[in-house]
Amino acid sequence: MNRIKIGSKHLHQNPALMCLLFIYSSVISVFALYLGNGISSFEVWVTFTAIIMANHLVLAFLTIRSKGYSITDFPSVFLLTTVLFNYSQILLLGIFKGYKWVSSWNKLTIYPEEIYKNTALILVVAVTCYVIGIRPFKYMSMNSEGIKECFTGSDLAIDKRCVIAGWIIIAFTLPFNLYEAYTLFMASRISYLATYETGIHDFVISIGWISVAGVACLITGYASNAKKLRLMALFFVIYGVEMISGNRGNSICAILALIVIYFADTKGQKKKINIIKLILIIALGYLLLDILLAIHLFRHTTDKSVTSFVACMIEANGNNPVFQTMENFGGTIAVISITQIFLKETHAFFFGKTFLAGLLAVFPNFSPNLQKLIRNSTLVAVIQEHGIYGRYTNIGSNYIAELYANFGYLWWIVMVLVGILVSILYEKLCKEDDAFKKACYSLPILCIITWTRWSFSQFVRLFFWGELLMLITYYIVGMFIHKNVR
Image (tube, rainbow, N blue to C red; front, side, top):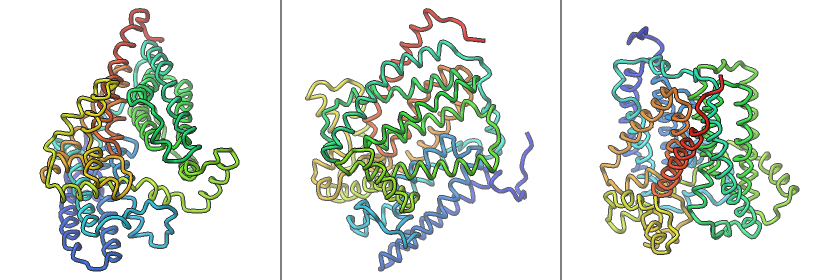
């Protein structure tokens, strides 16, 4: 393996030097933001902060790239979702001042300025610690080519046992997923708020999303068959169509998890993208953003006809779809801000209690008492009980807020561990040769990606029961199928 010299002009190919530059830049950014908190004009502060955060993010992605990860690899995807759900609004408001906000998702009109300034600091520290945690013990011994040794496509033929297990899992779980989407869609015809009162049991929802593991089995099982792999696009379409029900976040996370699995298993077979393909990908991405924005508008209408959706598409296309996506999804930053308000008023950190109590979610909560106990283990439930939830706005959850609320001023150490976990998990996925074992990584990856907008307890059940169902199904299929198709 050829090493890149320190004096090389290709800085992004030297992870050790790039990481040192990133750490140095991060310290400057945090110090600048800290001093910037004294700026009296909030509008000037937002612009100042957005520029610093944008530069910091560019260096963060370059540092991850220097460690051998592409944009479709798990460490990059996790950072992308973190940025989308947390950074978007402050970047939009501070840099693109001409953008006209088209909804009530602007959280800057809700929180005290002091809280929002602290939130910006927390976000920069979170990204810094996460990036530092990625492959921390290999900075000095490996360059950007080092990780490619584990990026080999599957050498196996079609793994028939894995494929059959995948189809069985899909046949059992996907109907639950479609039922959830249909119920949400019908509720949205009454009103958007009615989608929060469908009465669908949490356990049923978890079973439905185990279908992602079934699709992953097909992706890894069919890895050596390009024609069969193209059929997997059907499931991407299914999860995409389900967004019309209003459940965009979960569908996007599911698609991202499957993209990670797909590219991790087919890197050895992947062809280079020429300029024509690149243009087509950009055009498709632009169209998908338009559709996402149309869905956002459609979910707030009571007319659920095709004509109404077409009208929403036309309206969405009339605005900048990139900026609107940043506006719509960036509202998760509310969780970090509201968590700070809660801790400021109560001075009560959780010291890991929500994580320990969240483990109870592994049990099906058909008992009302257990259901209440599991619900009260979430950060959002505690905040809602205190009254802050109602004072501001509906919020989901967020891994940064959970770490901050549980570990106080030591939360940044846990963020480093999150980076270590993500990189180790992905490298094990890439180095795994067995198709079924590769597919087993799909649920942990899905859970971690959705942690950017879920609470810890919400994916405990999905992970445990999903992996259990995969193992049981694979074992039963193995009683009848012993050989792969060659």
